[in-house]
Length: 64
Image (cartoon, rainbow, N blue to C red):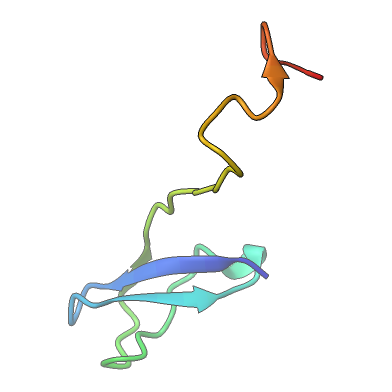
């Protein structure tokens, strides 16, 4: 199951929660104040490459 980030509108705290995809857009209970007025935040995807060079990708972006 994916990890989502939420923010509580009652206390303002952010929290992460593992939630099934089908329940990701439903209100989740805040672990700090038990409030149920929460919103899912837009998550940013991050990836780490093995080096800062082109890592073996040639020319027009094809794989070698």
